[in-house]
Image (tube, rainbow over all chains, first blue to last red; front, side, top):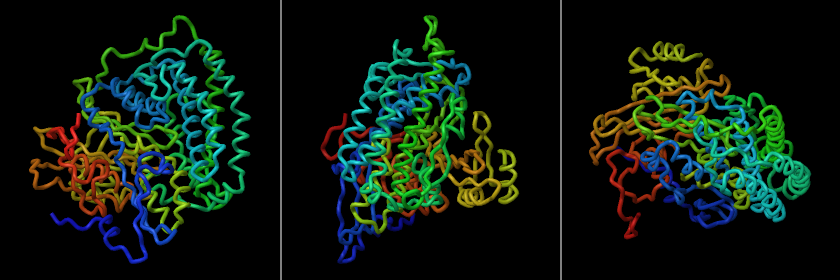
Length: 393
Length: 165
């Protein structure tokens, strides 16, 4: 077999005299976890970026070879640990479709799932925005975002018993019904949070220094974004209206009203860092709308009743018939997919592969950061919003 | 274009031998493609106005166990303008001889996102993708021995003198 030199070898072996190799990470605070970027620099200019990951690899797919579907859910939580509910929702939806029970799930359960997922989406975006501010040098938004996120964490802890890794959505139902008074407290939170979002926008979104650091930086053209498999805010930031909640119309999203924000190059060029950032703030506002609609229904026609048992539809044994199936869903970071292969005999899947949105979004980084300043590289990486738990799995 | 029309399109263009099998047992039907023609098929599906599969959602490798000794690569394509999805598969027999690796053609020229997916498949399954410009390990250390997701893999007991448990 003819093995030619890899691109990595060509890049790192043929350094010019003025070029220098710098390691950024894996312990660098602005790499958002244990990501190592190998930079080939010429002074302050980045000529090439080579990402190295795997420091957080926990053999998710290997573990899945020995676990039943229900036992995999806690592992799924730990992939994108900032949006565990969304991970669970996608996984559970896939198993339910294979079992053919996705149409039998009671409406109240579906609405609770969407409610907690959207709460989790807000908290994930708050982290993205807060840490993005701190990457660029704005300290206050970080503290504000974490303060507001803590309210969501407390609510979800109240429902599931855990602060971040919930294991709340189960195949065929839920762990428990929402605790009594959850809907009221959630409404109270929304009332509190709406003015805070306006404040956050005044502090960061329209901040001239912030715009100066992000507008026109790291422009991702739409064709490149599609070719590199970017999804979520990355793809929408480049101007494409593509949201799987609308495209695939899963769960109860067709019954809910919300807009899909897209980037328009308002401050610089379409697909720059500011656009990607703005998509996230707009999505928080849309998630608030979804949550309000869910609460309306959960308090009126789908009100809690003593007979309601969220575990009533749980299958005794989860054995899907022999097939393979790919499920995709819209996570805060983008398209999360699971590829299942079932043999139709056991409760253990033959193979589960996770298609992580951060993994694909990160792969475009070398392409859009050639020739930028090192300080701008930090801005670009922050705008991608990666979670290393998901990149490395 | 629905599934059968795509099937006809491919057999018209590349001859009847291009599709070796059609799997329809699950919710998502899949086409088994001749591994030698996979790059041309993917290019056609991407560039044809009626299919326009411009988005590679996922590329997965599968080891079909010690009896069959078959390695499979599964492509999940999505078309953004047509809002359609398609599953392609290619299979090759390999006797698990350590000296060689199962050899597939890389589609990283068709969709750049395939490059990292193929690196992952190389890392965990030991599948060689001919034409991938940067085929290195991606998740495991560069000097890791063996391919952990293969069915005949025996879990390592230590790495550089550090016990694994």
